[in-house]
Length: 400
Image (cartoon, rainbow, N blue to C red; front, side, top):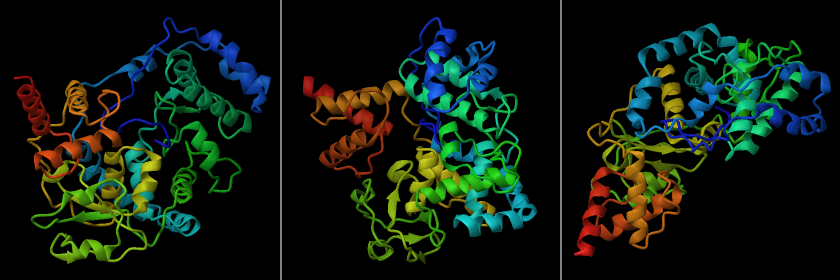
């Protein structure tokens, strides 16, 4: 969703609930701030009259999955035969609209369709909860992220003030993501467009508005029509996995010289943007070279699995083949407690991961790479069970 931080594979940030949730107190506190932001008293009263907290929203927000969905299962759920076929059908049905959007914003039509497919299954799963109620509940109930939800709540009221949608039609997900392409209210204000020319930015019921808004969002973050999002590659034997470190962008010529090829021994073609190597499942899984267009998709949702799903679905809608290399399906992702243990063990060895929160971010991956270097392992930065077991063994040996 554009943009609500979280993980597309099931990782959520910890919710600190204020119990009991005093929604009326929150509304009293936020009213003045909303009025200063341009929301009229009449709009505020209409949107909040009789508002009660949505307990289910807090339950959904507080859910802490112990096990993260593997990237291959995430892709299987989103890039399936039905979603590919529907995308190809929409490609034909909406050919004129998609061509016009591509001309206006310079974003590949297949990628626009893929975002629509991933976000709301082509408009069939937009969410039916009151956005105002959900955001008010989260702003009042989630102490840790209250300011984030508060901003989104006020932004939602501003949308009502501007008259693009009624309170009754302003529905979305439990987190307040709205419409065909699941914009958060602040993203709506910044990037939503009226593409069908009816005077309203209607991302709920106007497919042209929804798709053009998504294209406008990607354009704002640097999408280049002349480049793909990325593509699968085959790495040579003895490949130096240090080249997969974050931020290591190189021209196509560099990767060709390093022996990297596309499936079928097809050479890596030149791109305008430099290319970065990503290994979503580590050295034992498929590899991809991605352009800065991939980074634009990550601005829509920061999870690598999400961006990969959008890119791959776009390719499949365009008629490309499935990913060739096998996923390491016998190498399960670490559970949250195991990831926390991994971080603690790395930190104990002087390899700082930051707080042991179970979230494997840039600092944790740098620590993993350092341990892999010491241990003579491929430096892919991937938090595998094998790596955790090696750290456990090293810890026991150090105590003996």
